[in-house]
Image (cartoon, rainbow, N blue to C red; front, side, top):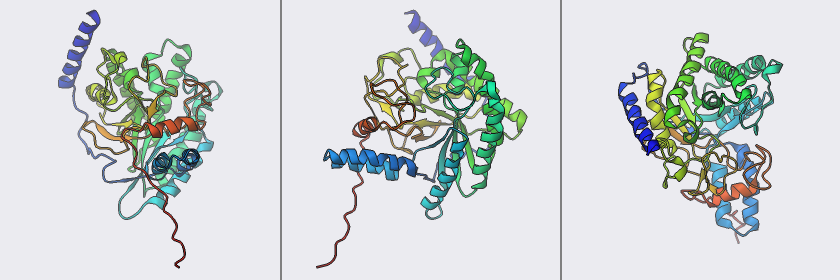
Length: 390
């Protein structure tokens, strides 16, 4: 009863925040995804050749054809996670230009993910830079500055850039972890710097806002918005014109956009799926003068009952590909559903027996994602070559 009362009070407070919150400063509110083609990452498609071959060997032509659809037609994001990985931006630009047809603009999804002391609480995706070894200066000058130069020079393309998945979530909830407490000022300064440097008309920035199971609890909404407000204010001190388009959620996680079944572990949370998380967080963002626009990763969605608790995040089984990027949805805070985490890349040596290291290809897992896709993927069959006329 006490918990239920707390939930009712928190819901009332949320409603009050929604009515009292000042709106962000007026300005153009053009959804950057509207009316644009989306870049399909060819290197991801090549990885899926292994999955297509596996289904073909099983005489499963339907799921081979469904995998071919993912490889050839569905837009995902390119993750740039090291200084050497900056070459992936050039590759994406080249391929996007080749894919562009007609007068429509092309939007390219990128992830910027290389903070010093990265992944302070989980450790499965630890990066190349350490704050103890001049990591922040290296991050700024050898990573962010070069990143910004590459996207600024491709003015014929638009870019949607997700900034540092999971990092600021640690600033909200994991200050009791010494490594995270020490890393937080580094995270905030690094992301503020990236925002200040990525101010170009063809670039649309989304700060990562973790997911509803992490930051969507009633007590976390206001502190989360305050952290984001502080970081954007820091960016404005570096560049008075600094702004962001909004926030990304559910990156590399498994939450539904709109849950068909409300899981028991979401009880008392106003953010039981990602649509409700966006709606719950929006008024607190607006109270900080921030935009309340979201992109939501649906590249992998856990099936109902797959998890016993929300904290299960690693190679969750069973799961499937979720709604396609750009699918229609009924939440005005959401710019687009997207596939940010490429399905098939392991979360780490956890979750399932035999799972490979973080980022390594996990073909058995992607086969499961294809089979469990919801809605089911449309098949793309290979065209039979025309033989010589008789």
